[in-house]
Image 1 (cartoon, rainbow, N blue to C red):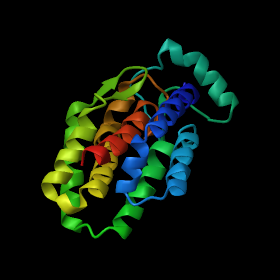
Image 2: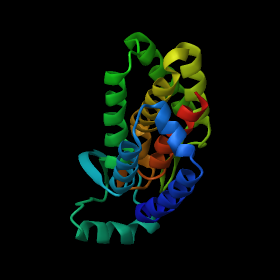
Image 3: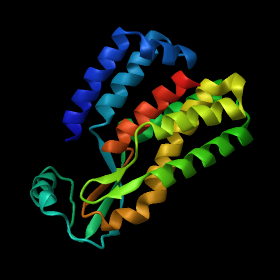
Length: 215
């Protein structure tokens, strides 16, 4: 499923590149065309990779749709167990956005206090607007996070609104819709929960791009 999603996202990104939308967004972040393409390709490829972190007890048995997937995923060495939920972090939707946010913080004079406030507000909005979806994961309306991030960035720090929008937008989704929702994944009927993975990857990626365009 993640592989199919990555193909769809790649096609969407190719279309956006053709009309110059992504070029505008990455220009506002100070990235060269080569660096932007490296970030895009790394994110898409990384979206298929989940790095295991730890397991927690599940309060609901895996949905029937997961039973067959559980067997072949274990055959691939995932070591998923019934009655447990494996918490992982997605490379493309988790590690890369975090690393790029740290890069932006280092190369832009953003006040630390403003950044923390922006991330806290965005995390609260993402937590409030996200919902557990049994058998799937955490779902959230896709436009709420980018619009909120852009408004927060422009309001708090206009002169650095583009990098601030990306940072608070992506980290806010990861914190509010993933980390703060870890308590809910026990009852989703899924043996795997990926921080920044599945639908959240789309949310993180699109939030970052759209928030920068709007800021």
